[in-house]
Image (cartoon, rainbow, N blue to C red; front, side):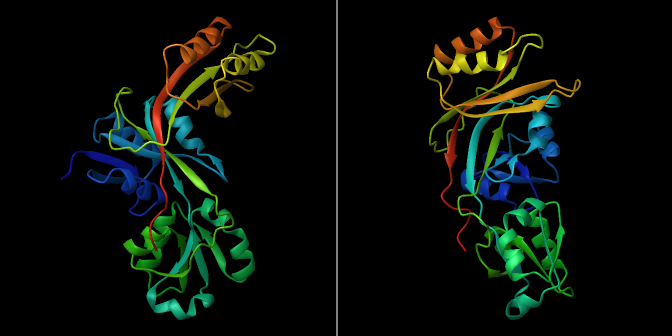
Length: 290
């Protein structure tokens, strides 16, 4: 039974799609070509939820997601999905036995970077070309049988586009994961089907421009309250050189005392503080069975 629409960064079989399938099992899945297009669709009411990548353990934050949420569409975060990233080399089934002779490998630049050791050791004479997503690379391989090519993508992409996984798990690091945020127009919206592994609260903090030691005071406001920060990151305000805001992740749900108290203390110091979301997060055990 379809209970609503959820959008994701497409095409079918991207890692974002894998995250969607792991949580939104009874929703209609709608792919979008870009992260901004997916976020806009939530804001315009075309879909109920939007799922977009926020951070990779190896490559860092997805700046496009952060900047678009801050500067263009300030939608609240209502959930987070953490997905293990498993990269596989895949070819058309007709080339399964000759995969070592392929001339070009296509993938997203992050996936290419995550498989550096394999490419450097096993494919030194093979050209590597970047594409907009791992799924698009797999789709391209499936549609161009006449070309002697392969793709680096996930198991869902191999299944979706009928490709043969010639070499599974070619990524450099087994602990690689990606965080995906769930967006909804209503910040109080619960995600009842999200089996959480805990909660987070995310704040945006802008420091006063003329106060020395302001960042130290910000950290102290959380420290003495024993609020654990899992992340603090600066991003440019886009208002001039040297102007930054900070994204802070607190490892607990918004309460009635500690986090509001820290926010009030920061505002008293002259900081601007905005709540971006307080939400459950869940870790999926696998990207997809091979």
